[in-house]
Image (tube, rainbow over all chains, first blue to last red; front, side, top):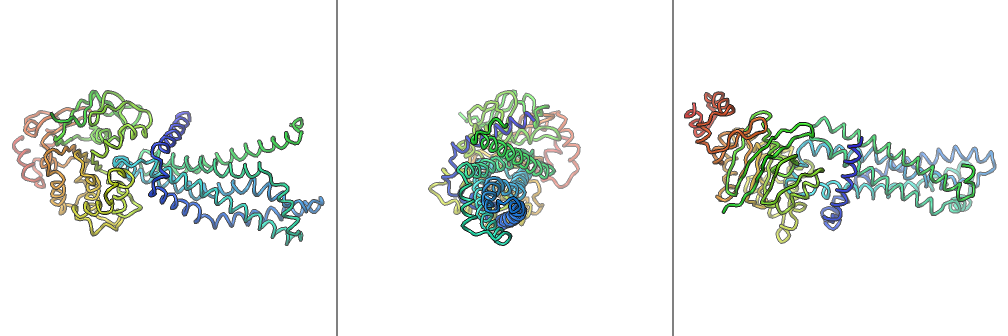
Length: 260
Length: 271
């Protein structure tokens, strides 16, 4: 594991070096590849993210509205939408969809290219593999994940309102007021932090595992599995740590630090 | 005085970090030399060519390309950095695995090399036009919109050679370029290569087991056995040599009729 960690670290450093020396975003051909990646990771995955947002919002509202009505707090349903769907679920569920759909695709594509000798021939022809293959996938994948998570958030807000209006006859103004009053800068920061940083890491790991193969065909599924498993593990662990830190921050800010 | 293109002294290299394959290799290749590199199984020839092409790091000894010494490094991308683009511009590489980009057409694949690898060199020219010219030269223009899997094995091979010649470099590193070329296309391959090597000062390192190809284009022969150089000289010197590889080759192939007359003569006179 130590060797893998140092290899990942070297990979991040090499990526940074390629970014600063090649300035890939200034190359219009690389910008075209980024757009293609956004089409694949973003536009083509929109449908499944919309379905996930709709289903999760309906389930959440249906489950929580019954409990809240019993406790007399049905009017605060908007705060549950902002607290769970926007802050926690939007980025996390989008990341899971992206891992299943795009991280696996990126890892298998790069490892297949390696097995076919395409990577070696590109390097021999002076094409920087990091600038031509890795950076467009990481940048395009990260941008797509952020856009998908934003779509997840607004769709879940609308579906949350529709569900609460049907199930507990909640008005838009009460729902909206409750949602806005509970939504803080910290919530939005956490949403963007997760969407940007975690997606950047999982796409970098996908390219790392894809390129790390030695060129044998049997390594293609191995690389794909490793990329998916480690990306999922990373997302789950990061999500847990972020949620616990947020809870700790909430307790401290309300003067309840002693409880911990 | 001729320029030293590749130089290695006591070069050690391996595919993994445990065991070395190339052991203490001493070799110098000057501008204008055309060198055929032979070797049987476990000879280390493919690895040597990958080190020469800057695709594999070495582990010990000294190694220089175009007069610049390359240091030992830890991560392969550093290697790309060290073997900087200006050196790659001077070197055309066609490896045994053609490595044509599978998800784009032949023309787009070749243009990728110009647009991403040599953008500065082709700034004033049209990459599209340059690729068309090269494809015409290699009789591939009518297949320019096909993807690699839609081409025949010979066409894929010609395309990989065409890609190596895009910037008309003075130095070439070819590995197994006649492999998978259909019998009926062999003469076509030779005529394509002759177009590339019309100028005398062009340097070639050819890793192959195809003796007729090697005899046609190379005047110096290097033979590897178990990662070390066991012979380095001309064809005439090879004929008189007593190395195991040559004995095996001449015994095995002396009765084969598929060899061209030049090779046949060499084998016959030796045996």
